[in-house]
Image (cartoon, rainbow, N blue to C red; front, side, top):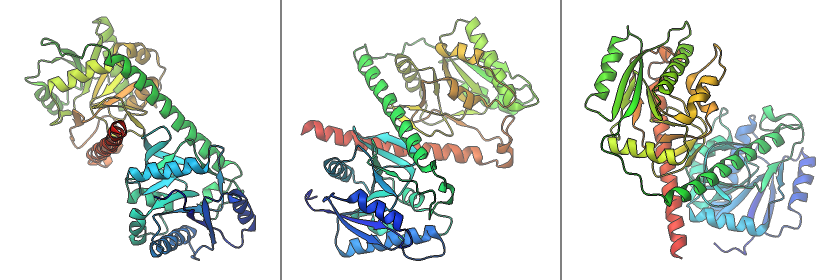
Length: 451
């Protein structure tokens, strides 16, 4: 890319919104790095379709002009204090090196992200189209995409590509005008600013968490590599209701010929609310672990099933290595998480972890489980995620849930008997995607080191 060529920049503005036009012209005043065009949105009875068709019009023009990329702005965009022409040029070049399709200057909400460099983050999903760089390699995807009144431009773009990034700190936010022509839920005076602020706080927390693990990993790298002892076995407590004989037979079969597990079948606590009974069962097991002076335990529900990726060496090595990273809780396989940070080749820190069929619980979390207040609304996996800060998931996972066609805990699974399978499939697909993104980051890092 030639850094001296002004960036083709299209500002979308309704003629009936002169207040917005005045604002956006002022935002770009004196910024020679942009070649500005203010364009009228393509009329449509649905505002979301009007915006999308206007973006398509911009892209078709960029195709005709053979542009390498274009900036698409809405008229409520506002430059942040971190913006500079040099920083934007650097971000555009860096993202292009990662084969980016879209680079956002700032987002109002975020689903899943990975830090690629000091100021560039990959994202799974986002909202906010007030300032986007769209690259040529993505032009045709936008032109060919179907779009209907239930869609929005940001969610549609997120669904069309895995190669989307944002800069942080944000270059761009949205200015509130007290109304929105596209998103009715933002028709308040301060909501939009709050969304950008809250998202920035979340990204900062993720960035600080990643820094913590980077520093911790440097310390652990100085230690002797973990070796799995020959005679090690992990205390493993399996929750089962006596009348669920088919589940008991299943779970016993899962642990046959696996001496690395010291198995104890624990009768599940009974409660009129299944989820409460599950949490009471967890507390019962933790008290047993304390009485037995266990340092780390595995808690299994009777619908746990080992994956093809399971091996004794893989699981035990990760249990021992995670202990060096001060982990409190690690999941052998989860059905959902939002934010994840790679902390090793096979482990991710996560903000939330849903699924309790195979939980590795470390001694430092025992007291938290017993002391945490709860009521009839308790959900074990959500509460466990909330009371533990240092939690991880294995990738690839070693555990899935066996579908018995019913659940003693979650009523929703009795209405949709395939929901568990679907959730695990989506989660594992997301892990595969994250590993793919991380491979890209490692390749770029290696190339940089060589250079």
